[in-house]
Length: 322
Image 1 (cartoon, helix red, strand yellow):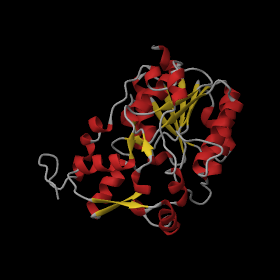
Image 2 (cartoon, helix red, strand yellow):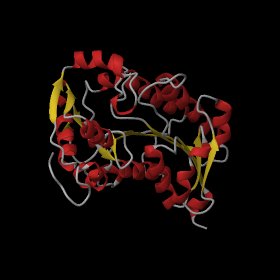
Image 3 (tube, one colour):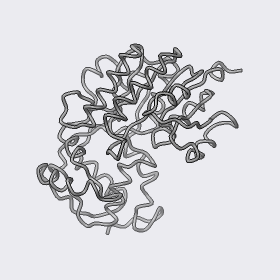
Image 4 (cartoon, helix red, strand yellow):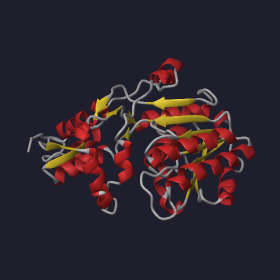
């Protein structure tokens, strides 16, 4: 039996966008995987990612400590991928990012499991964004309970099922004008979901530094305008990119936070766009990056055409500007 087959990894939030890639990466390394989700019946798409019986979904609600403790029982490692970009009912930023992280970390500590906590670049206890403040609180709570935990802070994550590139490509199908908040000057360092999943799996393997905070970014820093233009180029759309001042964006978001689907925009998301989301020089100097883990990150230019082609007016095989 391979050594990893003896190790059970509990993954909270394993049925989501990043989660399915993390589960796949762990399955390829022969770990036994317990995916802890609120609705296990909706996690069937994870089964083909591993061998028969390798991946098992269980019911757990991170707001209830008893269910979390049950989910980590017997685990050698615990991965926390739980997060929300907007609040709904009891799923507040404070409940999901801060309190739930503390609950998971304490449960992991009680069974002596290694902890990998996925946060976000921009996590800052002094931020004007509640998302960023609670992400920082989640990191602090995790390290307080498990000082040897590894924290992963990805930049904005892109990939086939993302709500980033796919969202803007879909909006470009609908509208001749796309707004650029503050003119699209905010800098991003988009990171491929597969690279983030590899980094998480490496941390579960014990290849990452204990108690360290890694910042995971792609190979290039781009402004939001450059990202939007790249998406338009890939999807063969000729659209007007219209600057939208922060104050006006915040006003519009007060109403759009109640909008469905693609049109949803919250005031807190506008706040997030006020600061750059790039890997810090300190992280680079300390080797706390993808490159420091020996991972060569993939670019948007290399990956996005593989899945955004479906938004082209003429489909995969013919390109035409409209």
